Length: 454
Image (cartoon, one colour):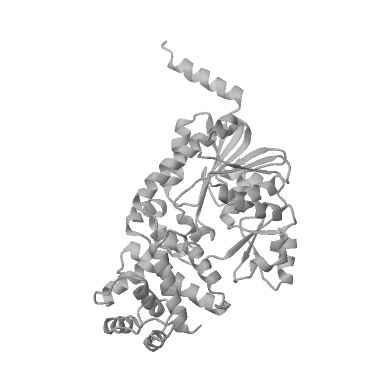
């Protein structure tokens, strides 16, 4: 493909992403499946154009308004602006790519030429830009993010706007981290141990993962280091009864099965039967034989009532805004709406209220999100503890010492991982333990006595 054809493809896909509801990576992957003539260099160039726009959309829109003389803020003009500001193209290169020839974008109009010329030598970010423009996030999210990060807001948003590395988790059912490093080295792939997770390997380059023996044989799984830590902190042990309540396609289910050494009973629940079905191949490849997949109609499904007090560990990776994953899914920031925060917070609270019924006395409820917002994280835990006095917060440092073993990055009761400080996705974990029966009964008696008139 010519550079112009690559640009035309990027504009087409950006327009489809803007109009559709599917994630950008799905839309791009489907395009490449339909256009198999596009080689690896073509795929790389098209993806680079697309993600330059998605990552810097707010700044590009600001520049279009400033230099575009009334040009529409759309996929074509964002791409033209990104070619100059983010990728360093010259006006001549832009003109040659957009010459209207077959498969290439139409020639530039006079206003477009003037905009391109005006952007030469400019920087994507300027100190005079509003905070949401500099940070490339929706303006309405500013107060939420400021509550979460305070004075570190700009640093955190800049980190979330970078390209993520590829994090891999070693499957303990198949081998250890050193064996995985050796296997990757034999494929000429350099992998470094992740700094926090004892199971993680980090790869900085793009690799053909699906073709690697270590992946095909189940020694490695793709999983961000933050997500690996969340699963480790569940402290799921061999012989336990464990439920992954919002299992999705099974990433954390696989990690939990490995922790349990394939001994015990592990249930993967989800309201999407198709997502659970997609986990089948991953479970088989990983050798995870203790997993029972249970599709449920909702988090209030009758299955929950039938299994009240049955599990040692209940893992709830709750639906959330997903702000912590913006490095990997920059398009998601432009799909989120103001009402989503309120609606998701209500859903998270209801899921926790239902899932806690599954926890046996002395068992633990693990609440995790890939959000950075206090409304979805600390506020949820505080509300839950106020409503459920038979649960207590287990200090994260004590659980970390037992499960991870390295220096704990959190000094409070809950774990909040950030991209700028920890180089993981933004992640939150809280461990909530139900009192043992005798203790709970004594607490109830004490509260009843205190309420009786003297």
